[in-house]
Image (tube, rainbow, N blue to C red; front, side, top):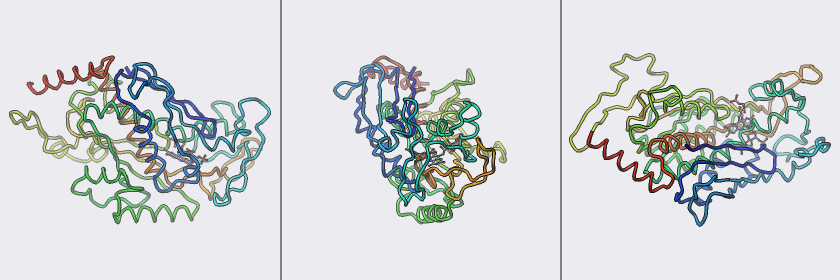
Length: 399
Ligand SMILES: Cc1cc2nc3c(=O)[nH]c(=O)nc-3n(C[C@H](O)[C@H](O)[C@H](O)COP(=O)(O)O)c2cc1C
Ligand SMILES: C=C(O[C@@H]1CC(C(=O)O)=C[C@@H](OP(=O)(O)O)[C@H]1O)C(=O)O
């Protein structure tokens, strides 16, 4: 069983992740993890923070000479912004009242440590009530999607496992605000792969231009945007997840992992909600068989999962992201100390983080698939996993 924990506040000294249960012998370098972290920072629509952070990852344990040891792997990403926030974020008492100055182009001249005007749509009010905090900063620091940098580093390690078994995971942005792909491109897989290196949808596409223009318009209006993401996993063998118990179903595990990403409000597998309005004859994927090649499907409306088990087709999941809660033209709220009506607090913020969330979504899909794969073909060393995988594939081929 593999598992992970993350820790760290958005403006604290560092983010940390510990991964436990990895097989020994997995080639792992910081550079492999860095590639995904760099993609997460680059999406169009982000605020000033991404210019400050370098998101450089360091491996602090569990690896020697580029190979995992089977012991817990610790990953660390320092927060560069911490240098400006040390007093506000001080661990010792009595140092928390200093103001932080934010550049004018961030449209906030100074930012007090104590936050008392909860932002509709963020964790501010619900978290303050639950944890009995009169300074909302004590909530927002951990609710911030800064934590997703740690998750992307964990997902990159999971991706390393999947790569050893020729499983690929990639994503694309299907919609930003009202701009959506009119029709799926003919070669969806190629399109999604291209989207990997693009700030919004696919490079040099008309839809990308429309999406970036939509983000620019929202930014100048002091507003924010959400959108839709698709994640595809190719090369997944049949047999990950299980029908035998609710928490082992691969679709439920993917949905839970993807819903855990801040601002994700809907997850669908394959046709998803569309399937509800169609007759069965147009939804279910007919089964074929060719000697030597095994079973096949003409369609993949199920998104590669039936009965909570991967069926060997591509896994396709979509995610709906709501618009960013922090608005530069703030919504009405109530001050939690004075109880007076006020405008919501304005923290420096992204206008749209859908492209960044797509990279986070890939990381979560990588994690769930790596977890399911290590369950199916586990071993203390990568070679042991490989041997189990070979035997399993041979059994499937002769089925
Ligand atoms: C990559 C990413 C970046 C985000 N950036 C911001 C941001 O700059 N400002 C903001 O208010 N919310 C941002 N969010 C969304 C909030 O973190 C999220 O809405 C909040 O934690 C409340 O959780 P919920 O939306 O799931 O209810 C971001 C989310 C993601 C995934
Ligand atoms: C720091 C990241 O995202 C942050 C997520 C976030 C939020 O409220 O979720 C608010 C912003 O934080 P800040 O006020 O420090 O700019 C984003 O920049 C990141 O993705 O690394």
